[in-house]
Image (cartoon, rainbow, N blue to C red):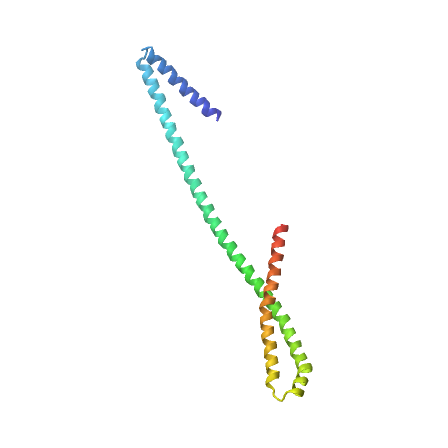
Length: 167
């Protein structure tokens, strides 16, 4: 910065002296030649500075464009990652819920066969009531599966949020 101030100081000083000569009508050909040479040098320096500045601006623009593209790519990857994590959590939760409900269904079927079946056979002459009870148990288990998956999914989301907050 100091070099620029010195350079500009010299040029401004030269311009001030030249204007003083104009005011006093004491301008000679050498003064005009000297001032013209200084002005030509200043224009040449301005051209160089402008070219360098233009090149640097182009590099900066390209770097900014690259950064924007990379940010968009990162956003896309983050969305894909979130979707994948969500799918994995759903699969994990679905397996867990299915395993629990399969166990519950087997237990309910066994209990129905051991406890309800003898009562149904004793008081009713048709097998359709037993099948209806089994169908009702199946429907209850199937509806419970969705509720259980939702419950486990909410727990997984809470775990993920707690991990994110603790970071």
